Length: 89
Image (tube, rainbow, N blue to C red; front, side, top):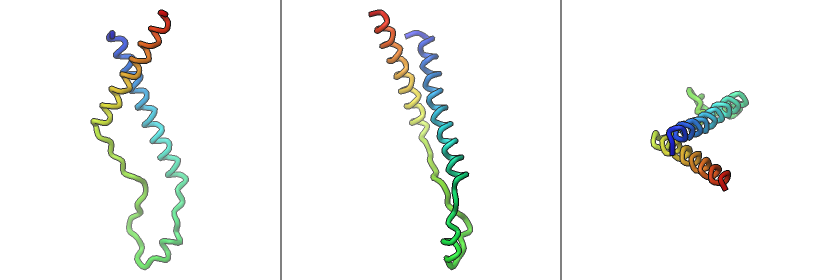
């Protein structure tokens, strides 16, 4: 495996992660803009809430990011290897 292939694999994996993050951001924006609270439920309670819980706190382990980056690189390298072998045959 050459340095060029490793760099291409890293960039491919990085692109996959950036697309995933963009999808998460866009879906969060859409969910937030379309959110309509149920005001009648708050009016019937005896004590009004001082804070409103919205959304989910999602923490991703740094190890998960590293593992998915490496797996993306392996996937790219394997696909490139297969394509090179098919073209030679």
